[in-house]
Length: 250
Ligand SMILES: Nc1ncnc2c1ncn2[C@@H]1O[C@H](COP(=O)(O)OP(=O)(O)OP(=O)(O)O)[C@@H](O)[C@H]1O
Image (cartoon, rainbow, N blue to C red; front, side, top):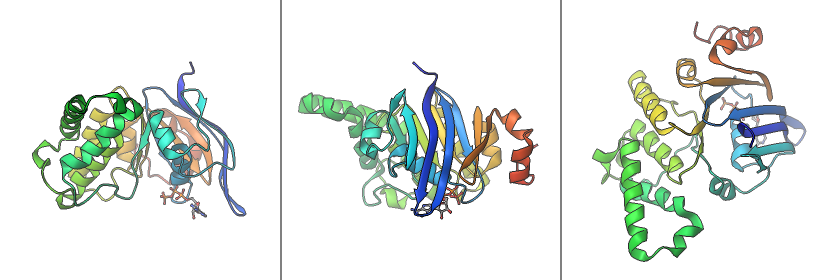
């Protein structure tokens, strides 16, 4: 089995005349935390949409665990063990925190679940939901409407929804967007915890977060990966310094 759990090969995406993803080769190793960074409009969200199945590639390949998932529908990709969160909030505001997470926990058992008896279904799902509540640190808020949570609690719930189905690979799109320093710190610890033993691919603009959280970083500029490496390698890369104009922490 390949070491790369996600493998992109000469991946391209065109919208009409414009090629937004221009021949991306990228490997994400099993068990690593990998950041995808790049200036606004570089194509980071587009790349996430391609990996998670929201967009179909114009050409090239996407492999998950060695198998091609290029062009598969999002729910089929989730079933193969890849979940993502979105920049926009995807929780159900008029359901409680517990009910939201219960929906995500139900997705964990897929078709196998239909074979359980009613009683064991309830037991397994309640256990998984309690575990999720604790993992995203929302046990105190379990009975609140999701819509009444603070902003950072909503983002934590959203991450819970993304990991609920039990994915090995988690894609997070700007998890720190709009957060204060304190909230960022809280979220950073939470992400460290929930991605323990899993693979994380994260798009994030906060360079301090990227450099402290991730094992490897890839830099996307105008639809091309200009560098991929450890934080040290990325920090000392001339092309990255040029693209970032000193935003990379020393
Ligand atoms: N559906 C679409 N149709 C046409 N152009 C699109 C579409 N989606 C994205 N683009 C274009 O692709 C380019 C890359 O957009 P994308 O949102 O992927 O960048 P990004 O790196 O995620 O930016 P940001 O950091 O600002 O979120 C932009 O120029 C955008 O206008």
